[in-house]
Image (tube, rainbow over all chains, first blue to last red; front, top):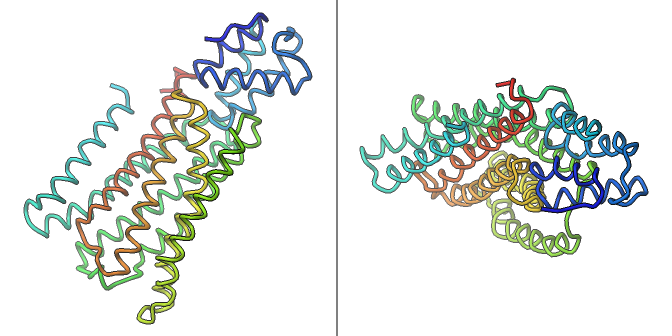
Length: 79
Length: 270
């Protein structure tokens, strides 16, 4: 079980890990934050909608747009 | 009991029936022929039913739903082919050892196209998703291995069939179509298997894992069938039938795991 110092990174991890596993969750968080030009430990509330939209793209391939949207909105509205 | 557990139980029963009839031959050759022709119809029918349920479960018409629809269409063609084959052999008393290709072969051949398209759509969708694709070095290591298998299939199967003076053009086409078609299916299936391996043992990757295993089993069974049939050594009750029957049930399991995954997001939709 991974622990992030950033509250949002930790919450995203907790949403993703049961579905995609530990390694993949960390990898998804890392690659998507890098795409935004930020580090995992500097995710802000304002980054969440964009991060959620990016993560939706990855989940759609397995879950379809409907279920991916559910996960994505959980990430976007976690505050 | 979960649907997936019921299907695992069914898989066990089918393997047991297969083995009992293929090894002990109770009831003689006629019963064996009935079992050999009816089990693939039952297994492919189960697969079609489960895939149909899966396609219906996706809420939106996106590429994910379409890729599963493609797999359903392909297995649907296989199901029709299995029925035709059974009817020809059991009820119309056609000698399937000499009658090749039959109408069933056209349906099997047609099924390859949507199956290949569905698997490629899944793989391309994954590449576009931005999710990790694993180590490039591993792809480089696997590529020569696939090339070796390709070379072996060409050298030991395709070239001898092509040079066979006793076979007509149409017969040669179908004997060669199956191994070539299988190679087109096995490459995306192996790639999907590698991707699912990256996820470990989690629910999200289970459908692809079983889909890949199912199509791999089909490929092995098809290659053995092409070789044995061309040598005239394939007949009812051949153990390689087990490969197709298990393959169909594994594909059905993939579909059921996908439904269970989607239901875990939307509990009301059962």
